[in-house]
Image (spheres, rainbow, N blue to C red):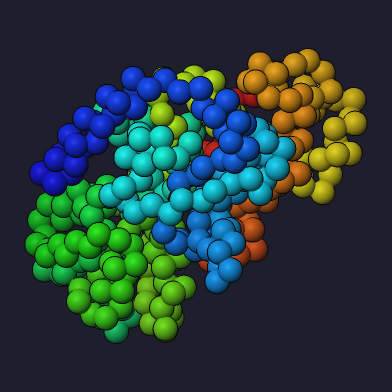
Length: 338
């Protein structure tokens, strides 16, 4: 807890600079002809490069969607891999235009860092992974366990809260990067690896024997993950926020990567407003009338991006769960485009 507070104090000091520099981010991006987007250092399904340096993932698709809306080209993105420790300062300093990296939305981060969360791309929660050989079926059986965790994350405090609440002892072993953390667990330096459940499934894919490990059923926290921008530039905040909302609304209205051009010809008022046939909603953001068409053509709607990267169509095969649309049993919801 002390380490987390100290880190927030350092970041809060840097936030003063971020707030003072009320940048015209849209102009900077368009003048540069390139979006600078902070991502993870390699988390399958969310943001990871292949051996040729091509990035894919749900967080990557958000970056490409913003580039499509702003620059009409989803390839005009410079991906900047960032550790948990460096991610916020990179945004505060102006090194990146947006941070689209698994980062939990909390009150302290939202108020103390000079940054704004723009929405939730993935509703997650923290869990535990163990070797099947331990024959542990519940997190409540982890008394006196050694636990590998990445420093600079909300996971450290959540572990402390959970074990204290259940009167259990534990040994925390913290590492600077996700790769160090998972490698140490795989080598047996600790009994348990803890992180967001999505990350547990993603990292398990990197193991030599992934089927030797299991994710325990308990989810011990709320971890809403989403993109961040600097405070002080409301136009850019709106652009990033409504790019995500456009993807969610497109799924709700049945607009897909394949049919978006045909749907743009529809006479339905709701579709005409969203896809630029009526009004000037895109122009109020500083974008073109067809900004949503650009987004969906580039990356698809939210459901398509989810399925392709982390869902049924991916190696992770994670169920939509809470990330289903609000009218399909989940809590994923976007304000209307009107």
